[in-house]
Every structure is written in structure tokens, then in C-alpha cells.
Length: 445
Image (cartoon, rainbow, N blue to C red; front, side, top):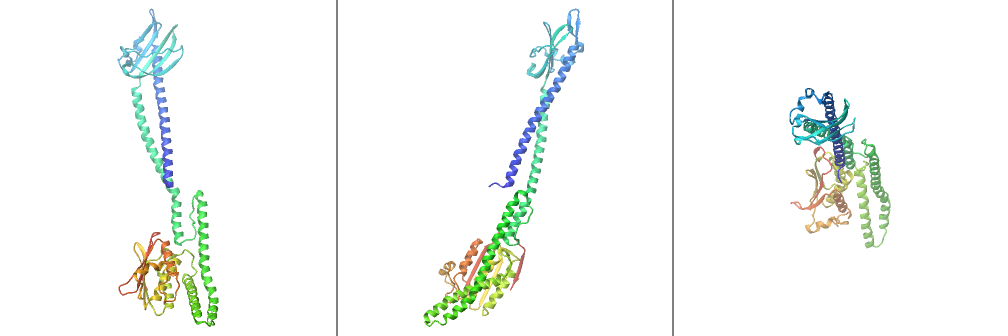
């Protein structure tokens, strides 16, 4: 879908173009009308001057040439007149051998016409009919409108330039207005990133009235999802804690079973259930009571995780190195689940040494290496299937690696199994760092 900014810009451009065209056409019409009226008034004034120059003599009505302006005596000057006195026609000398188009008018009436005139000129002609000294006479006074048209073209050019500048200014102001109007939405976008990263629980950015229902719906959805996930995670820990006592009673009852084979099989199943319960309780202790969706802080969170693992596996030397930003845009409990499962499996396999490294380049890379027996290359791919276990000889359950794979997939990452030079197994997890940039710190433990 086209961006809202582009849609508003396009709509504004169309409005500005429409207004510019309307203003230009309207201004052109007004200008044409004003210039025509100006020339028409001048022609009417010249007609009145000609009328005043008509005198009565013994031979009848004649035109006194001394009262005629010089422009009417120069051939092709662009100023012409024709007077009809009864059967006589008086031409201005400027017409020379040319004719001026004639149109009759009623007595006492006048009109203005734009016509093709002498010498190939376009002329504006004023026609009028009068009665003077007992006789009826008609006049036609014309002026070449080429200078008028040239002035009109110049004014058109100026008007177009001014209109273009005004339209550009309006578009720039509109663009600035759109940017200011959309500024709150940019802040909302940042807050949505923070919401996704767990740095806030709701969007509180003031927004235009039209967007408030959408922000309200997003806040309600975020609150509902946070509560749902928190209840789900808490219920797992509560359930694990509640099952521990019945499981202990079950183990005691199993010890009373006389059939040795059945007793060992039941003990095996009970131990697996116990591992699941211990894992969930361990996860709950590590995760603590922090809010769901909290950002992952590798140095702090992994230090707590390593401390728990060292207590659970005192025979293993566990070394951790964290060279990463203070916080990363991943869910804290997801990362504790991921690293916790991998560390737990590594400590179970290890002969005596486990190393954990976290560093950030273009991706977040988590590397866990142990000195255990390792896994043949042909069997590594099968490890990620649900229910797979790294070593049937070590107490554990089959959900750990499947959960790890689900978490890695949810972040668009990948998990690799490698064999170190000294033997054992190296698990390398790569997660794309795509949500935000954060300050960088290094720490070792």
C-alpha cells in the first residue's frame, strides 16, 4: 500500500494544481476584461473628440482636421476611424487604402468588437450612432490591440511565475505540515519497538484524535498478551512445584513394588518426570519475577544462570565470556530458556569442562562448548527433532533441544553443531540483531 505521506502529498499536489489553474484562468479573464475596458474607454473618448470636431458649414457638416490627433493621420499607425454623414464617408488618413469593417448600430447605442482590421492587424472597434445639428451620423473608432496582447502575454508570464512560486510554497508548507502531523506516529513506531523489546508495557505517546482508537486497541492487545504469557509461564512453575510432592510419594510407592524389572522401569519413568519438574523449577528460579517481555541483559542474566549451573554441577568447570551490549532486543525468558537448556545438556555430557561465549557482530552469537564424548556428524541433524536427547545414558528429558530450536526459529536464527579440535561438542546459535542498536559492553566471568 502507498504510504500515507505520499497519498497526502499527491492529494495536496492535485489541490494546489487545481487552485493554480482556476486562479490563472480567472485572473486571465479579469485581466483581459480590464484591458478591454481600458482600451474601450479610450476609443469612446476619441469618438467623443471626433464628434466634437464635426462642424456645420454652408456646405453641410464637415470634420475639422485641426482637432484630430496626429496618430489618425499616419498611415498604418494602428489608430483608425470612419465617420458616415448621411451619404458621405470620412476615413482617417491612417487607413490610407485599407478598409475598416463596418457594423451598423441603432441611434444612441454603442458597442465594442474585436475584429480583423487593416494591415493584417487585430483591432478593437468602437461603434456608435449619434444625432448632431439635425443630422444622424455613425462612427467607428479602432485601435490595434497588438500592444495590448503583448502586455497580456507579459502579465500571463508574470502570473504563471508568481502562481508557480506560490504553489511551490504551498506544497512545501503542506509537506512540513504533513511531517509535523505524522511526527507523533514516528514516536509511536519507536514505542512499538520498545514494546516489542520489553522496555515498556504500553504506548503513551499523544496522538491525533483519529489514531487514538488504534493506539487504545494496541495497548489492550499488548496487555492481554502479556498477562496471557505470564499466566502460562507461572502456571508451568506452579504445576511443577505442585507435582513434586505427589511424585515423591509415587517414588516411595514404587520402592514397594516386588517385581524388580517393573520397579526399575517405573523408577526410570519417575526420574524423567522428576527431571521435567526440576527443569521448570530451575527455569522459574532463574527467570525470577521480572515482567514478561523484559529485554535480555546478557551479562546480568547469564551470571545468574552460570551460578545456578555451577551449583547443580559442581564437578564441571564452567567458564563464561560475554562481549555484548548491556541489553539486547530479545525476550529475557526466551534467552534463559535457550541458553539454560544448552548449558544443562553440556554440563551433563562434559567430562569436566564447559565454556560459554556470547558476542555480537552483525548477529548475536552464542557458543557453548563441552569436552564430552561428542556426537557423530551423521546424528547431529536428528538432535533437533522433538523428543531427541543428547545422551540416553545421562538423566534428562527429550524436550530441551526441540524447545531450543523453536526459540531460535522464532527469531529467524540458526543453530549449528560442530566438533572442536580437542573433541566434544560445540553448539553455535546465531540470532539476527534486527530490532535496535544498543550501547556495547564487555565482561568476563
